[in-house]
Image 1 (cartoon, rainbow, N blue to C red):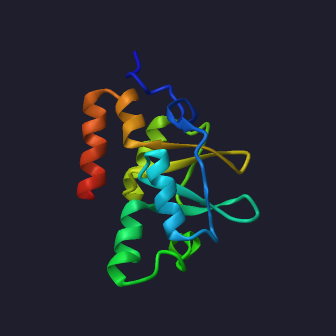
Image 2: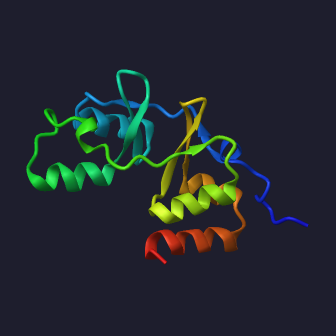
Length: 144
C-alpha cells in the first residue's frame, strides 16, 4: 500500500495559472501585484515568455528597501537568481526533495518549457499527510 500523495505529481498539487511579473517591471509593480493577488512570490518572465526566476516579498524588503534602492527603478529581473523548477509530471516526492535541497518554499511548475503553475507550502498542506508536511517544513527551515 502506498502512502497518500505518493502517486501524485507536481501538476496534481500545483496552484494553476500563476501570473508573472515581467523582468523589466519595477519592484513597486511586483509588490502591488503580490498585494492584489494575495501571494508572497511571483514568477519572473522575460520578454521571450520564458521563466527567469522568482521574486518574493522578502526579496523586495531585503534586497531593495533595506539597501536604500528605489522601488520604481529597480526591476524584478535584477533580483532574479538561481532558478529552481520542476516539470509537471515530476512526482510529489521528487518535488519535495528538490524544494528541500534548494531550501525553497515555493516552486514553479513547467510543462513544455512553459509556466503552468506554482506549488507553495499551502498547496502542500492540502495534499500531504501531516507527518510528511512536518518533515518537509523541518528540512526547508532548518537546512537539515
